[in-house]
Length: 370
Image 1: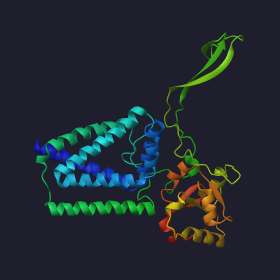
Image 2: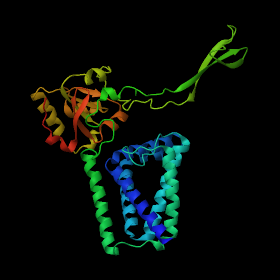
Image 3: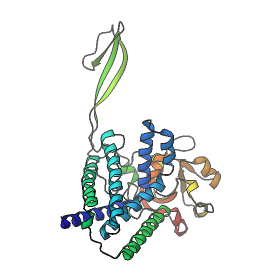
């Protein structure tokens, strides 16, 4: 039993550290997933006011949750404060199991984001994993006496403290710059125009169409092959999903850029030959009060006659901050969450291909060039 408990402890601890770190390279991803849960619960009528308020703190919750995963996993590996650690492990697993069961059985959220965007797994796989981990965590709690510490309490505590600080620093760094590992569709080298197309091996959804007709106050439903005679009056039509398709959503399916007049200029802009720049302003309020690097980039681009366009969902605020002489395109806020993983992100484009990109904390290092 002692050997089994310690093997389980090592596997679980390592898995928690891995899961936490892979989300720590992009904490905004988990924050957006948390917002999905809050919105789903609010739309279901469960404390909508409170859920709406909690959504504003999703990033803080994300940072805390990620740090907890790493710290609990490391504490379990070290055998540090086993009673507290095993109880924390059980509570975390219970929470994760609740979330994954909601994803699986409600169908309102596509995935839980348990391993971030780098390792997508299905709701069934995630739920199965959490059930296994729940059983293991119960075993570790009951049999914690078999967990042997690897270091003395003070040394282990110092290691845990250092890991906490390091995990928080990593998340602080990527929120200012960009994710250490980019696993999204907008990574450097990707062709946005190509990724907006339907995948070549896409299998479309299969629908069944039926029609509702009325006669003498009686309504009946008919298939397209057996419509009634002209004495019946058409009322409505109904479309029913018979079989879900596969791989039938483009990797980039919601990225549309609009001019001030409301014209969709996405294709025209991305087909522009040569080098140009896109300055994504996702959250103007998320930038430091004295942040001037964006204005400096615009001035440098105008001096060197290099095309630079601002993309935002906060057009009024951006025009007020940068001036009316700039070109501003609007984009859906949801699309910006994926395209810009920092409050402001600069893309260097070569036609439709992303040649490079920088988070706002690195704008001062950018040398605009054609």
